[in-house]
Length: 89
Image (cartoon, rainbow, N blue to C red; front, side, top):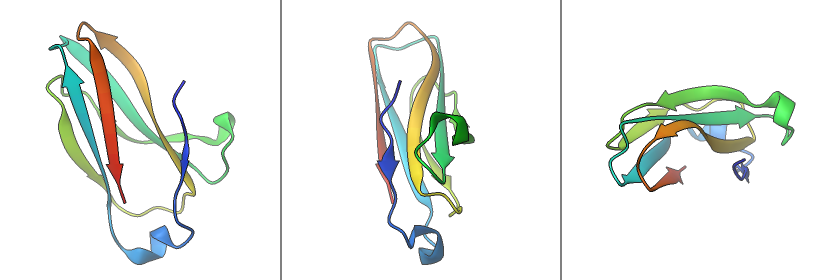
Protein backbone atom coordinates (compact mmCIF):
# COMPACT_ATOMS: atom_id res chain seq x y z
CA UNK A 1 0.00 0.00 0.00
CA UNK A 2 1.27 3.48 -0.77
CA UNK A 3 0.54 6.85 0.76
CA UNK A 4 -1.69 9.27 -1.08
CA UNK A 5 -1.06 12.99 -1.35
CA UNK A 6 -3.41 15.87 -2.12
CA UNK A 7 -2.55 18.17 -5.02
CA UNK A 8 -3.15 21.93 -4.88
CA UNK A 9 -6.76 22.66 -5.86
CA UNK A 10 -5.69 24.69 -8.91
CA UNK A 11 -2.95 22.32 -10.11
CA UNK A 12 -4.67 21.28 -13.36
CA UNK A 13 -5.17 24.96 -14.30
CA UNK A 14 -1.52 25.85 -13.68
CA UNK A 15 -0.46 24.11 -16.92
CA UNK A 16 2.62 22.54 -15.33
CA UNK A 17 3.35 18.83 -15.72
CA UNK A 18 3.65 16.55 -12.77
CA UNK A 19 7.19 15.13 -12.72
CA UNK A 20 7.89 11.85 -10.98
CA UNK A 21 11.21 10.12 -10.58
CA UNK A 22 12.04 6.60 -9.45
CA UNK A 23 15.32 5.96 -7.66
CA UNK A 24 16.07 2.27 -7.39
CA UNK A 25 18.80 0.73 -5.21
CA UNK A 26 20.22 -2.74 -5.67
CA UNK A 27 19.79 -3.35 -9.43
CA UNK A 28 16.49 -5.21 -9.75
CA UNK A 29 16.02 -7.30 -12.87
CA UNK A 30 12.45 -6.03 -13.31
CA UNK A 31 10.13 -3.43 -11.79
CA UNK A 32 6.73 -1.93 -12.43
CA UNK A 33 5.68 1.33 -10.75
CA UNK A 34 2.31 2.97 -11.34
CA UNK A 35 1.52 6.64 -10.82
CA UNK A 36 -2.16 6.70 -9.87
CA UNK A 37 -4.60 9.58 -9.52
CA UNK A 38 -8.15 10.13 -8.25
CA UNK A 39 -10.67 12.88 -7.58
CA UNK A 40 -11.37 11.49 -4.10
CA UNK A 41 -8.98 9.64 -1.83
CA UNK A 42 -10.83 6.32 -2.17
CA UNK A 43 -9.02 3.16 -3.32
CA UNK A 44 -11.72 2.25 -5.85
CA UNK A 45 -11.39 5.63 -7.61
CA UNK A 46 -7.65 5.53 -8.33
CA UNK A 47 -6.66 5.04 -11.98
CA UNK A 48 -3.24 4.48 -13.52
CA UNK A 49 -1.92 7.72 -15.05
CA UNK A 50 1.55 6.50 -16.02
CA UNK A 51 3.75 3.42 -15.65
CA UNK A 52 7.51 3.10 -15.22
CA UNK A 53 9.27 -0.19 -15.94
CA UNK A 54 12.89 0.95 -16.27
CA UNK A 55 14.87 -1.04 -13.68
CA UNK A 56 17.58 1.62 -13.45
CA UNK A 57 15.09 4.33 -12.47
CA UNK A 58 13.88 7.25 -14.55
CA UNK A 59 12.18 10.64 -14.59
CA UNK A 60 8.78 10.95 -16.26
CA UNK A 61 6.35 13.81 -16.98
CA UNK A 62 2.54 13.70 -16.87
CA UNK A 63 0.41 16.47 -18.33
CA UNK A 64 -2.06 18.18 -15.97
CA UNK A 65 -5.24 16.18 -15.40
CA UNK A 66 -8.36 16.84 -13.37
CA UNK A 67 -7.30 14.90 -10.27
CA UNK A 68 -6.98 15.87 -6.62
CA UNK A 69 -4.96 12.98 -5.17
CA UNK A 70 -1.91 11.01 -6.33
CA UNK A 71 0.00 7.98 -5.18
CA UNK A 72 2.63 5.61 -6.58
CA UNK A 73 2.06 1.86 -6.39
CA UNK A 74 4.82 -0.70 -6.77
CA UNK A 75 3.03 -3.32 -8.85
CA UNK A 76 6.02 -5.68 -8.94
CA UNK A 77 9.75 -5.89 -8.36
CA UNK A 78 12.24 -8.69 -8.90
CA UNK A 79 15.45 -8.17 -6.97
CA UNK A 80 16.85 -4.87 -5.78
CA UNK A 81 16.71 -3.59 -2.23
CA UNK A 82 14.63 -0.41 -2.18
CA UNK A 83 12.69 2.07 -4.29
CA UNK A 84 12.22 5.77 -3.66
CA UNK A 85 9.84 7.90 -5.69
CA UNK A 86 10.00 11.68 -5.78
CA UNK A 87 7.03 13.65 -7.16
CA UNK A 88 7.34 17.33 -8.11
CA UNK A 89 4.36 19.47 -8.97
